[in-house]
Amino acid sequence: MVLKNAHILLGVTGGIAAYKSVELLRLLKKAGANVHVAMTRAALEFVGKTTFEVLSENPVLTDLWKGPQSSVTHIDIATSVDAALVAPATANFIGKLASGIADDALLTTLLAVTSPVMICPSMNTDMYQNIRVQRNLDILEQDGIHIIDPDAGVLACKTVGTGRLPEPWFILDRLCAVLTPKDLLGKKVLITAGPTLEAIDPVRYVSNHSSGKMGYAIARAAEKRGAIVTLVSGPVSLDPPVEVEFIPVQSCDEMARAVFSHLDLADIIIKVAAVADYKPVAPGVLKIKKRQNSKELSISMTENMDILKQVGKLKTKDQFLVGFAAETNDLEQHALLKMEKKNLDMIAANLVGTADSGFKTDTNKVTLFLKDGSSKDIPLMDKEKVAHILLDTIIEQTG
View 1 (cartoon, rainbow, N blue to C red):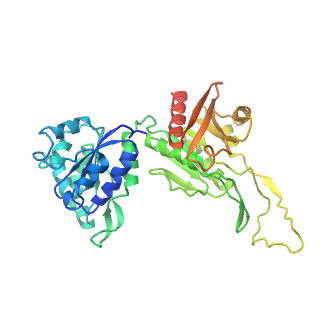
View 2 (view 1 turned 135 degrees about the vertical axis):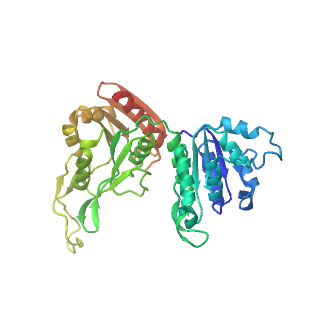
View 3 (view 1 turned 180 degrees about the horizontal axis):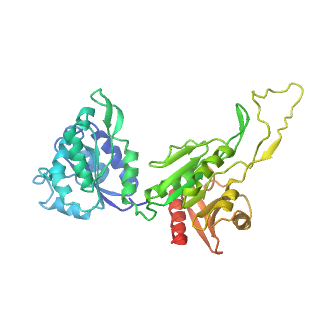
């Protein structure tokens, strides 16, 4: 959301990882950003500027004196961008930037940028660990430049170690975090997501269709807004959000233990998880075999702990508790009843069973009901946007 119509300067320096910058540019454009690319002479040895010009739909800045650029083009770009991002950033570039040297188009442009600057070091492991390179990175960090640490793995030089440029999606995620206002800075947010699995035997279980997408979207949004986020998640096929404390669980009992162990420190609790209401009384120790003389199987079930209700009993006046209600009918009636019975400050309710809202979809249509009797309809939109609107509403309510 923060990249839509944003002006971004993408700097590319002369490292083998420059090929990843092409994908990074594509992701920036897909997110709605207007991107200007500046390349060093060494970068041109790895990727031609035509590729970046076609994808960015803007001229690529490579020289202050040649080509269609005017003598102040770099200043025009520097003063118009909302953020600057250099990926990859070589040791040579890092050293020059730390010293304030401006001997090419990219460095000269960056020295005139007053908006946030992020760099992504990428080089041989020994080069990266060299005391001089680390000193230069420390200088840049002290100057307020955001540093994205490189990944570890097999490098182009066959070395195994730290120095790989992180994947473009990760760099994009961290750029979004830098640009997102920190209106939840320091707040501790506890979120549950996904389904729970209640064992029938070692190979079978009772569960539901929750994908975890809504809870994970809220966790990502809260982290970007400065919150300290703990995500307790049942089994899903999603990667854990970046910079979030992640606690994987299986059953309702495991989720309950994780929630209650973190509850006292939480300022905001958002219970998105679809916890199974019932579990088998006596799960089989061995796999239950098909019975030759019977086509029916009965499993005795017992009620699970109602984690949300228990949290509602334990929460203090300074904690804000949000629940979710996935309903198939009478949405408002069921949501308001659940909010009252479980002592919620807000409930997010939606109808499931449609093709574009609820379980497994990337979009959602939600109504927020508040303890003061007011409500807010969120029309069908991407779950990331729903997450931010939900957090906006929490901030409005908590001051």
